[in-house]
Length: 130
Image 1: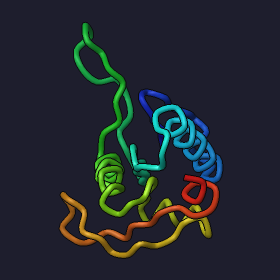
Image 2: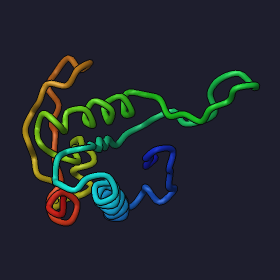
Image 3: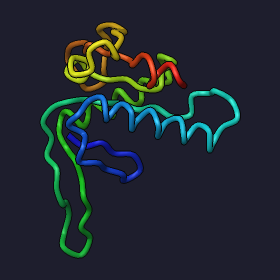
Image 4: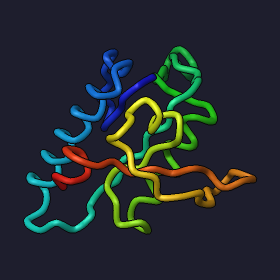
């Protein structure tokens, strides 16, 4: 699992409560630094599952990257925030790890997926504070 925000990663992404606390703090900081009102200026998508992580590209232009279906789902969830007037959306695997912190939005169509996906938003400190 990797937590990324503008090339920021943390190895402590194995504790769901810590991940949510870090994301909520980052989102609150970005909003306070860039906006004087509560408009939705960013969205976060979180998906839990396997991904390929490593260096990509030729030796003269090496980049660090994360690829896979889990990463694609997180990106799709990120873009769905504006439509659903949320800040943080996650998949069912992430919601299961978060327990009561997650609130189910429903089975929603996600671009690139043949079947609808169970999508959740976050309650309490993460979503409620924004």
